[in-house]
Picture (cartoon, rainbow, N blue to C red):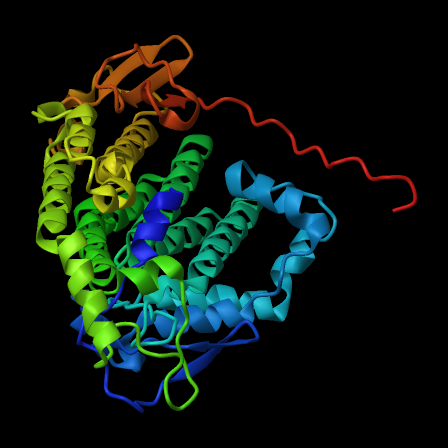
Length: 465
């Protein structure tokens, strides 16, 4: 993952495409720190698909207002808060209810919910334009992750009170946040979007399994899931943005190798940082560029990198049950790069895990819709589950019942204590509904009734604290 982030952030303007000198740089305050906003036009010139949206129509600025609103989580509530994120609400924990009810947190929750319902979102990017973006930062990502957890914990609080409609809305807010975050221009945003959507999916599934919602409630939830499905983050988009980043890195390394490798920070005539993308007109600058192009043949290096990105994109877009490629086939492209091309060999991360995120998200979404349909059937048949998925009739389309990892319908069987619904998972093999921790290798499984929840146990306090 570190390699992914480094390759993402180490992008530069192609030589000679510096922005206009003296252009004003906007700064905004983000949780007490003034942050320079990278102009959208500058990023567009680098090839990134940044949208120019009017602020009043851009959900990003509402999210940033929410980021500035919430209060930091007190250290003594971290354990209970994290338990609520991953399990159920720890009713009776001193201070957690009070923290959620603080005015600043109520404002943050309301702003996040409003932002999530807006159709368009383009996050700003922070850093100094016209230079290498090795220092480009995305502090809003960690803040968005915390906001998604705050939304989920509020949903857990409402669920514990029996207000299931309000809880569902909080979890859907989290899912919509994930679709917004995952549509950014960097691969790391793409991965954060998947993580937020997965959090929402887990909490929705748990609510549907643990509570007897009415057919009308389940029908409303399914409509929301149908609407959200096409907006899930896309691995293909994230990988295409990663390709842009990687190829631009070659441009800088091959045109200014001494400067990049030495890490020298030159200064411009006005005392500010020099634009690293403008080759000095003096003889030394021209010599460095010629030597770089001679010793580091950029076109050949780019061919090596492009071959890898083409292969990993092909892998990402093939349905898992119909793949003609394996992860080993993708990684072999890097192994075939000549030893002299250290730039491509060192800068190309392994992206096969990122390439599979879209299919994992789709499998989880189909499982969630399957859970909703099964619970709806039970609500209409006095708690009796269907004998087979085909008995659901028109409640789910064939596409929604598809297990993307096998190309066949999701697995389902009735058991003495209830039923089990599962996908065969990334290994493509039916392991009989045996789940692995983290859903990494074996089947992706939901059971009804769900297992009892382990109670929250506060950490023992040290004497004198």
